[in-house]
Amino acid sequence: MDIIDKRILFYLLKDGRISQRRIASLLNLTPASLNYRFKKLMDSGILKGFKLYVNPNFFGKYQIFIAFKNYTDIDAGWISFKLKCLEWLNVYGVYGSDNTELKDKIGYMTKELGEPVLSYFPLQSLFRASNLDQKIVEILKVDPRLSSSEISKKINISSRIIEKHIRYLRHRGLIHVAPLIDLGKTDIIIFSIFSKNIDEITVVLQECKLWQFTDGYAGITVCYADNMERARKYIDLARQIDSTADVMIIYDYMFQ
Image 1 (cartoon, helix red, strand yellow):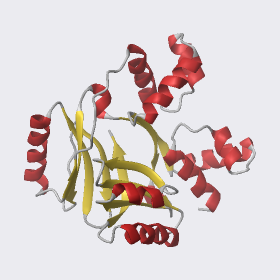
Image 2 (tube, one colour):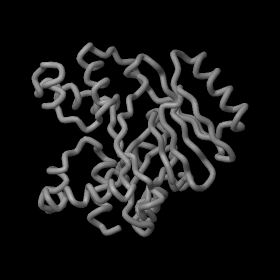
Image 3 (cartoon, helix red, strand yellow):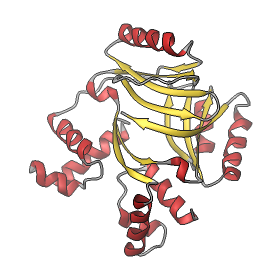
Image 4 (cartoon, one colour):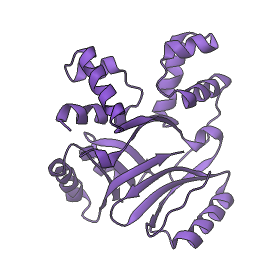
């Protein structure tokens, strides 16, 4: 995999709705050349599609991030996402209506997986989705990369209004479109850093950051690197700030 294909995957991981035209511009490629590479990534099974992640806060649910040793795994409808790490942890996003329900679900997971190693309950406020927000989310669940103009045609509302709502939902961290990448077929590095000094860590990881889950103080930052050498550079910068930061290589991820 050459650096151009890696950059395409990076831009898609940052924003799964980025247009091919925009990626072509960023990489100084012709649209035809970018389209050829995009198709090749899909035909080879590296890029398997796209998935809309919806923060449970959008549906009036609370979410906790919790990590267990990865001796075994678990699936459930109330797991919003999962990061599978090569070394010794799997990270789960778990949601529920209130603290009691979250505790019950964590209790069930503990029986199946053992005691949790890390947990983060981020500061969060439940979102009151408008009818338009709900319509947009339902459409994006079916086709996460559908353009605002195409959504506009489906529900007969101005594309500018549609785009404004999508930008707001993304800014609030309520939706994110993620590419489904078979990481085993690539040589890119996706890694997570667990830190108790999330604010300062974020500054040095801004260039590589994909996703972040935090309670405002501690948290998990998921990063991208073209190769192991560059990953080590980011890890060294992070550990200069937090020498106790844990680093895990992610070999698979899932969004519900």
